[in-house]
Image (cartoon, rainbow, N blue to C red):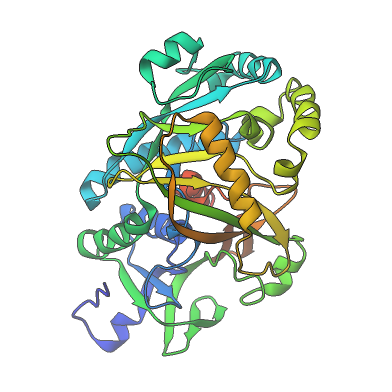
Length: 382
């Protein structure tokens, strides 16, 4: 993966931009800089991309993102993913979103959403119309189904590595894997192996809240959020027409939950789905090339969540899966946990440490969906 230019030792250690962290936020900054003709180095402490960015759904979610900058960044990121994926050998596995509303109050939230600018291009389908387009949906109790064409899905387990390789091979980005950054005092970056230099540095370290610039992060009152996710094998021939969500997503995703109409739905769900809400569960289902489904997820918060999945939480997620899809078979073949930094007040942190140094963290679990848009905003203001 490492791309070392055939130049002198001194030149190999000097760059226009150093990015700390090879997750999707770091790679988005590397891509944005390379497109501007900058000489870029990405320094990653692990020997490969194995962090939060490969453990998520690979769901590039536009619909439901918070109104304003988050939704705008998601729209832009989706455009970049669509352009970059074929060049990097990343398959777009499916497109579109189906969100099934089973409760009248959920239908009211979707009606309100359709009246916002975020509803442009979306359709609110009757159950009969949704059944024609997505026959795998369980629609016996559905009141309406939101369809959005704006969302797409890649396989995050492979997409992040393919994106890094493409950046190295086609854009000349230098990757230094297995190398921890110990100190940043731009233009000087001290690592566990050498001293690098760059005119600018972007620190995109995701869950490393107690390392670089921990004093600045303490001021943000960040917590870690841990997710439980599963891989499920359905019956042969089962195909999703797009990503799938349900009622619980309407009180979690800010594009819906910040609408006035969501308050009544939340009150109803607190009565009917108190346990699911207590575990931060809302249903997302996407499909992989091998036909398996990636299903989740839950949200548990703390300074250091234990890295163990809870069986009863998985059982709740699987119940919502069966209530939403017509599945004859749902065999769990893998379970894992993901993590991301979380803020109660913002979706993204962009901290100008000095004129040449930026600290950039996505604090809402929307890195795959918004990172390219965030990186463009960082460079536009730099």
